[in-house]
Image 1: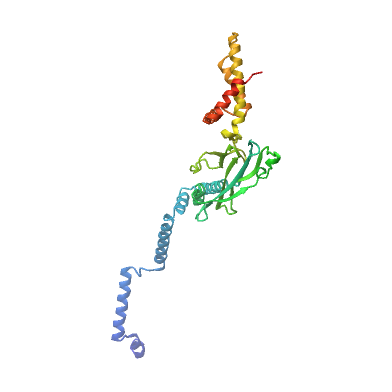
Image 2: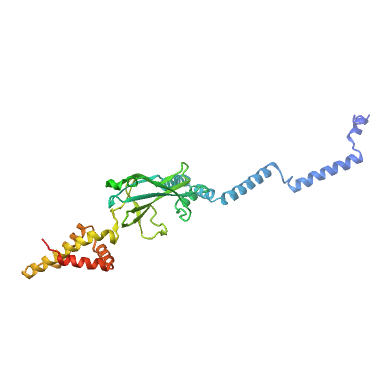
Length: 338
Protein backbone atom coordinates (compact mmCIF):
# COMPACT_ATOMS: atom_id res chain seq x y z
CA UNK A 1 0.00 0.00 0.00
CA UNK A 2 1.29 3.41 -1.00
CA UNK A 3 1.75 5.84 1.90
CA UNK A 4 -0.72 8.13 0.09
CA UNK A 5 -3.26 5.39 0.19
CA UNK A 6 -2.91 4.17 -3.47
CA UNK A 7 -2.77 0.58 -4.47
CA UNK A 8 0.44 -0.21 -6.46
CA UNK A 9 -1.75 -1.94 -9.04
CA UNK A 10 -3.63 1.31 -9.64
CA UNK A 11 -0.39 3.23 -10.05
CA UNK A 12 0.84 0.72 -12.58
CA UNK A 13 -2.29 1.27 -14.67
CA UNK A 14 -1.56 5.00 -14.79
CA UNK A 15 1.87 4.41 -16.22
CA UNK A 16 2.40 4.04 -20.02
CA UNK A 17 4.74 1.76 -21.73
CA UNK A 18 7.48 3.15 -23.93
CA UNK A 19 5.67 2.17 -27.12
CA UNK A 20 2.41 3.65 -25.88
CA UNK A 21 4.18 6.82 -24.91
CA UNK A 22 5.80 7.21 -28.36
CA UNK A 23 2.47 6.49 -30.05
CA UNK A 24 0.79 9.16 -28.06
CA UNK A 25 3.44 11.64 -28.97
CA UNK A 26 3.05 10.81 -32.67
CA UNK A 27 -0.72 11.20 -32.47
CA UNK A 28 -0.36 14.51 -30.74
CA UNK A 29 2.05 15.65 -33.44
CA UNK A 30 -0.46 14.65 -36.13
CA UNK A 31 -3.17 16.58 -34.43
CA UNK A 32 -0.96 19.62 -34.06
CA UNK A 33 0.09 19.32 -37.75
CA UNK A 34 -3.54 19.16 -38.90
CA UNK A 35 -4.39 22.12 -36.76
CA UNK A 36 -1.48 24.09 -38.16
CA UNK A 37 -2.64 23.31 -41.75
CA UNK A 38 -6.22 24.32 -41.03
CA UNK A 39 -7.80 20.90 -41.41
CA UNK A 40 -8.73 18.87 -44.63
CA UNK A 41 -9.31 21.03 -47.87
CA UNK A 42 -12.18 19.03 -49.42
CA UNK A 43 -14.65 19.57 -46.68
CA UNK A 44 -18.40 19.31 -47.56
CA UNK A 45 -18.85 23.09 -47.95
CA UNK A 46 -15.88 23.28 -50.31
CA UNK A 47 -17.22 20.42 -52.38
CA UNK A 48 -20.66 22.05 -52.65
CA UNK A 49 -19.20 25.39 -53.75
CA UNK A 50 -16.97 23.68 -56.33
CA UNK A 51 -19.89 21.77 -57.81
CA UNK A 52 -22.03 24.93 -57.96
CA UNK A 53 -19.27 26.88 -59.73
CA UNK A 54 -18.71 24.05 -62.23
CA UNK A 55 -22.42 23.77 -63.02
CA UNK A 56 -22.65 27.54 -63.38
CA UNK A 57 -19.74 27.56 -65.84
CA UNK A 58 -21.29 24.73 -67.84
CA UNK A 59 -24.65 26.51 -67.86
CA UNK A 60 -23.13 29.78 -69.09
CA UNK A 61 -21.25 27.88 -71.79
CA UNK A 62 -24.48 26.28 -72.98
CA UNK A 63 -26.35 29.58 -72.88
CA UNK A 64 -23.77 31.59 -74.83
CA UNK A 65 -23.35 28.87 -77.42
CA UNK A 66 -27.07 29.13 -78.34
CA UNK A 67 -28.21 32.51 -79.77
CA UNK A 68 -31.81 32.03 -78.59
CA UNK A 69 -30.79 31.10 -75.03
CA UNK A 70 -28.31 33.96 -75.01
CA UNK A 71 -31.07 36.44 -75.95
CA UNK A 72 -33.35 35.04 -73.26
CA UNK A 73 -30.62 35.21 -70.61
CA UNK A 74 -29.68 38.77 -71.48
CA UNK A 75 -33.35 39.77 -71.44
CA UNK A 76 -33.64 38.17 -68.01
CA UNK A 77 -30.62 40.10 -66.71
CA UNK A 78 -32.07 43.32 -68.13
CA UNK A 79 -35.42 42.66 -66.47
CA UNK A 80 -37.19 42.50 -69.88
CA UNK A 81 -37.97 38.80 -70.11
CA UNK A 82 -41.70 39.47 -70.42
CA UNK A 83 -41.15 41.90 -73.30
CA UNK A 84 -38.79 39.45 -74.95
CA UNK A 85 -41.32 36.61 -74.75
CA UNK A 86 -44.00 38.90 -76.22
CA UNK A 87 -41.68 39.73 -79.12
CA UNK A 88 -41.06 36.02 -79.69
CA UNK A 89 -44.79 35.34 -79.69
CA UNK A 90 -45.45 38.14 -82.20
CA UNK A 91 -42.59 36.98 -84.42
CA UNK A 92 -44.01 33.45 -84.40
CA UNK A 93 -47.45 34.76 -85.33
CA UNK A 94 -45.94 36.83 -88.17
CA UNK A 95 -44.17 33.75 -89.53
CA UNK A 96 -47.37 31.72 -89.38
CA UNK A 97 -49.30 34.46 -91.19
CA UNK A 98 -46.65 34.74 -93.88
CA UNK A 99 -46.61 30.98 -94.45
CA UNK A 100 -50.41 31.04 -94.73
CA UNK A 101 -50.22 33.91 -97.21
CA UNK A 102 -47.50 32.29 -99.32
CA UNK A 103 -49.37 28.98 -99.46
CA UNK A 104 -52.95 30.21 -99.70
CA UNK A 105 -55.11 28.66 -102.40
CA UNK A 106 -55.88 31.13 -105.19
CA UNK A 107 -58.42 30.87 -107.97
CA UNK A 108 -59.21 33.21 -110.82
CA UNK A 109 -61.90 33.86 -113.39
CA UNK A 110 -61.53 34.79 -117.04
CA UNK A 111 -63.87 35.13 -120.03
CA UNK A 112 -62.47 34.54 -123.51
CA UNK A 113 -64.21 36.29 -126.41
CA UNK A 114 -62.88 36.47 -129.94
CA UNK A 115 -63.65 36.58 -133.66
CA UNK A 116 -64.43 34.81 -135.82
CA UNK A 117 -66.69 33.12 -133.30
CA UNK A 118 -66.32 29.72 -134.89
CA UNK A 119 -62.58 29.63 -134.14
CA UNK A 120 -61.11 26.70 -132.27
CA UNK A 121 -59.68 27.52 -128.83
CA UNK A 122 -57.22 25.14 -127.18
CA UNK A 123 -56.57 25.76 -123.47
CA UNK A 124 -53.71 23.85 -121.84
CA UNK A 125 -53.22 23.89 -118.07
CA UNK A 126 -49.59 23.61 -116.92
CA UNK A 127 -48.87 22.63 -113.30
CA UNK A 128 -45.52 23.43 -111.65
CA UNK A 129 -44.48 22.22 -108.18
CA UNK A 130 -42.45 24.03 -105.52
CA UNK A 131 -41.30 21.45 -102.95
CA UNK A 132 -40.14 22.85 -99.60
CA UNK A 133 -40.41 19.61 -97.62
CA UNK A 134 -36.74 19.74 -96.65
CA UNK A 135 -37.11 23.06 -94.78
CA UNK A 136 -35.87 22.56 -91.20
CA UNK A 137 -37.94 25.32 -89.60
CA UNK A 138 -40.45 28.06 -90.36
CA UNK A 139 -37.76 30.57 -91.35
CA UNK A 140 -36.27 28.16 -93.89
CA UNK A 141 -39.77 27.29 -95.12
CA UNK A 142 -40.60 30.94 -95.73
CA UNK A 143 -37.36 31.47 -97.63
CA UNK A 144 -38.14 28.45 -99.82
CA UNK A 145 -41.75 29.50 -100.44
CA UNK A 146 -40.62 32.94 -101.56
CA UNK A 147 -38.64 31.34 -104.37
CA UNK A 148 -39.84 30.54 -107.88
CA UNK A 149 -40.62 27.15 -109.28
CA UNK A 150 -38.13 25.50 -111.61
CA UNK A 151 -39.55 26.44 -114.99
CA UNK A 152 -36.92 24.34 -116.73
CA UNK A 153 -38.57 21.22 -115.32
CA UNK A 154 -41.34 19.72 -117.46
CA UNK A 155 -44.71 20.51 -115.85
CA UNK A 156 -47.77 18.31 -115.67
CA UNK A 157 -50.16 19.30 -118.47
CA UNK A 158 -53.80 18.71 -119.27
CA UNK A 159 -56.27 20.19 -121.74
CA UNK A 160 -59.31 22.09 -120.50
CA UNK A 161 -62.50 21.25 -122.33
CA UNK A 162 -64.53 24.12 -123.81
CA UNK A 163 -67.46 24.58 -126.26
CA UNK A 164 -65.29 25.72 -129.20
CA UNK A 165 -63.88 22.20 -129.49
CA UNK A 166 -67.31 20.73 -130.24
CA UNK A 167 -69.06 23.15 -132.65
CA UNK A 168 -70.27 22.02 -136.09
CA UNK A 169 -69.06 24.62 -138.59
CA UNK A 170 -71.12 23.03 -141.34
CA UNK A 171 -74.18 24.16 -139.38
CA UNK A 172 -72.63 27.59 -138.83
CA UNK A 173 -72.50 27.07 -135.07
CA UNK A 174 -70.60 29.72 -133.13
CA UNK A 175 -69.48 30.36 -129.56
CA UNK A 176 -70.26 33.74 -128.07
CA UNK A 177 -67.65 33.46 -125.31
CA UNK A 178 -65.82 30.96 -123.11
CA UNK A 179 -66.12 31.65 -119.35
CA UNK A 180 -63.44 30.13 -117.16
CA UNK A 181 -64.55 30.34 -113.54
CA UNK A 182 -62.49 29.59 -110.44
CA UNK A 183 -59.60 28.00 -112.28
CA UNK A 184 -56.59 27.32 -110.01
CA UNK A 185 -53.71 29.78 -109.86
CA UNK A 186 -52.06 28.31 -106.77
CA UNK A 187 -52.80 25.38 -104.46
CA UNK A 188 -50.90 23.96 -101.49
CA UNK A 189 -50.61 20.64 -99.71
CA UNK A 190 -52.20 20.22 -96.28
CA UNK A 191 -48.87 20.63 -94.47
CA UNK A 192 -48.16 23.78 -96.54
CA UNK A 193 -44.75 22.48 -97.55
CA UNK A 194 -45.62 21.94 -101.21
CA UNK A 195 -47.08 24.59 -103.48
CA UNK A 196 -48.49 24.01 -106.96
CA UNK A 197 -48.65 26.93 -109.37
CA UNK A 198 -50.71 26.88 -112.54
CA UNK A 199 -50.22 28.56 -115.90
CA UNK A 200 -52.37 28.43 -119.02
CA UNK A 201 -51.56 28.42 -122.72
CA UNK A 202 -54.42 29.57 -124.95
CA UNK A 203 -54.28 29.07 -128.74
CA UNK A 204 -57.01 30.48 -130.99
CA UNK A 205 -57.02 29.31 -134.60
CA UNK A 206 -59.26 29.24 -137.63
CA UNK A 207 -58.64 28.14 -141.19
CA UNK A 208 -57.75 31.15 -143.34
CA UNK A 209 -56.63 33.21 -140.31
CA UNK A 210 -53.37 33.73 -138.48
CA UNK A 211 -53.54 32.10 -135.02
CA UNK A 212 -53.23 34.06 -131.81
CA UNK A 213 -51.53 32.71 -128.70
CA UNK A 214 -51.76 33.83 -125.09
CA UNK A 215 -49.96 32.68 -121.96
CA UNK A 216 -51.52 33.34 -118.55
CA UNK A 217 -49.40 33.28 -115.39
CA UNK A 218 -49.33 34.74 -111.90
CA UNK A 219 -45.53 35.22 -111.86
CA UNK A 220 -44.60 38.65 -113.20
CA UNK A 221 -40.90 37.79 -112.81
CA UNK A 222 -41.25 34.65 -114.87
CA UNK A 223 -38.38 33.98 -117.33
CA UNK A 224 -39.28 34.74 -120.97
CA UNK A 225 -41.14 32.06 -122.86
CA UNK A 226 -39.50 30.12 -125.65
CA UNK A 227 -42.61 30.58 -127.78
CA UNK A 228 -42.72 33.39 -130.34
CA UNK A 229 -45.71 35.61 -131.05
CA UNK A 230 -47.22 34.80 -127.65
CA UNK A 231 -48.84 37.52 -125.58
CA UNK A 232 -48.27 37.07 -121.84
CA UNK A 233 -51.14 37.98 -119.50
CA UNK A 234 -50.90 38.19 -115.71
CA UNK A 235 -53.35 37.49 -112.94
CA UNK A 236 -54.01 40.53 -110.77
CA UNK A 237 -55.86 40.74 -107.47
CA UNK A 238 -59.04 42.82 -107.76
CA UNK A 239 -60.25 42.23 -104.21
CA UNK A 240 -60.02 39.77 -101.29
CA UNK A 241 -59.63 36.39 -102.96
CA UNK A 242 -60.62 37.81 -106.37
CA UNK A 243 -58.13 37.37 -109.23
CA UNK A 244 -58.69 38.32 -112.87
CA UNK A 245 -56.82 38.85 -116.13
CA UNK A 246 -57.03 41.99 -118.25
CA UNK A 247 -58.17 40.21 -121.43
CA UNK A 248 -59.61 42.58 -124.03
CA UNK A 249 -60.68 40.10 -126.63
CA UNK A 250 -58.92 38.62 -129.62
CA UNK A 251 -59.67 39.15 -133.30
CA UNK A 252 -57.89 36.72 -135.55
CA UNK A 253 -56.19 38.41 -138.46
CA UNK A 254 -57.31 37.00 -141.82
CA UNK A 255 -54.77 35.77 -144.32
CA UNK A 256 -54.69 37.73 -147.61
CA UNK A 257 -56.64 35.12 -149.54
CA UNK A 258 -59.32 35.02 -146.85
CA UNK A 259 -59.57 38.83 -146.76
CA UNK A 260 -59.67 39.26 -150.54
CA UNK A 261 -63.46 39.59 -150.85
CA UNK A 262 -63.74 42.11 -148.01
CA UNK A 263 -60.69 43.92 -149.36
CA UNK A 264 -62.40 44.46 -152.72
CA UNK A 265 -65.57 45.75 -151.02
CA UNK A 266 -63.53 48.13 -148.90
CA UNK A 267 -61.61 49.42 -151.94
CA UNK A 268 -64.88 50.20 -153.72
CA UNK A 269 -66.27 52.08 -150.70
CA UNK A 270 -63.00 53.99 -150.28
CA UNK A 271 -63.15 54.95 -153.96
CA UNK A 272 -66.64 56.36 -153.53
CA UNK A 273 -65.54 58.27 -150.44
CA UNK A 274 -62.64 59.77 -152.35
CA UNK A 275 -64.89 60.88 -155.22
CA UNK A 276 -67.45 62.37 -152.83
CA UNK A 277 -64.82 64.33 -150.87
CA UNK A 278 -63.26 65.65 -154.07
CA UNK A 279 -66.66 66.77 -155.36
CA UNK A 280 -67.61 68.59 -152.15
CA UNK A 281 -64.26 70.35 -151.90
CA UNK A 282 -64.67 71.61 -155.46
CA UNK A 283 -68.01 73.01 -154.36
CA UNK A 284 -66.14 74.96 -151.69
CA UNK A 285 -67.06 72.83 -148.69
CA UNK A 286 -64.42 72.54 -145.99
CA UNK A 287 -63.77 68.88 -145.26
CA UNK A 288 -60.76 68.26 -143.01
CA UNK A 289 -58.29 65.43 -143.42
CA UNK A 290 -59.16 64.23 -139.91
CA UNK A 291 -62.78 63.82 -140.94
CA UNK A 292 -61.76 61.86 -144.02
CA UNK A 293 -59.45 59.72 -141.90
CA UNK A 294 -62.25 58.89 -139.48
CA UNK A 295 -64.66 57.86 -142.27
CA UNK A 296 -61.95 55.70 -143.87
CA UNK A 297 -61.45 53.83 -140.59
CA UNK A 298 -65.20 53.28 -140.30
CA UNK A 299 -65.21 51.72 -143.77
CA UNK A 300 -62.32 49.43 -142.91
CA UNK A 301 -63.96 48.33 -139.66
CA UNK A 302 -67.20 47.64 -141.48
CA UNK A 303 -65.42 45.20 -143.74
CA UNK A 304 -63.50 43.42 -140.98
CA UNK A 305 -60.22 45.39 -140.83
CA UNK A 306 -59.62 46.58 -137.27
CA UNK A 307 -56.72 48.93 -137.90
CA UNK A 308 -54.87 50.68 -140.71
CA UNK A 309 -51.87 48.45 -139.96
CA UNK A 310 -53.95 45.35 -140.63
CA UNK A 311 -55.31 46.91 -143.81
CA UNK A 312 -51.87 47.90 -145.04
CA UNK A 313 -50.53 44.41 -144.45
CA UNK A 314 -53.36 42.79 -146.46
CA UNK A 315 -53.06 45.47 -149.14
CA UNK A 316 -49.32 44.86 -149.56
CA UNK A 317 -49.78 41.08 -149.77
CA UNK A 318 -52.58 41.24 -152.36
CA UNK A 319 -50.71 43.69 -154.57
CA UNK A 320 -48.10 41.00 -155.11
CA UNK A 321 -50.71 39.12 -157.19
CA UNK A 322 -50.45 40.87 -160.58
CA UNK A 323 -53.54 39.21 -162.04
CA UNK A 324 -55.63 40.21 -159.05
CA UNK A 325 -54.43 43.82 -159.22
CA UNK A 326 -55.24 44.03 -162.93
CA UNK A 327 -58.73 42.64 -162.41
CA UNK A 328 -59.39 44.98 -159.48
CA UNK A 329 -58.29 48.05 -161.45
CA UNK A 330 -60.86 47.24 -164.13
CA UNK A 331 -63.57 46.82 -161.50
CA UNK A 332 -62.69 50.11 -159.84
CA UNK A 333 -62.81 52.03 -163.08
CA UNK A 334 -66.19 50.57 -163.98
CA UNK A 335 -67.67 51.08 -160.54
CA UNK A 336 -70.53 53.55 -160.19
CA UNK A 337 -71.08 55.04 -156.76
CA UNK A 338 -74.64 55.54 -155.52
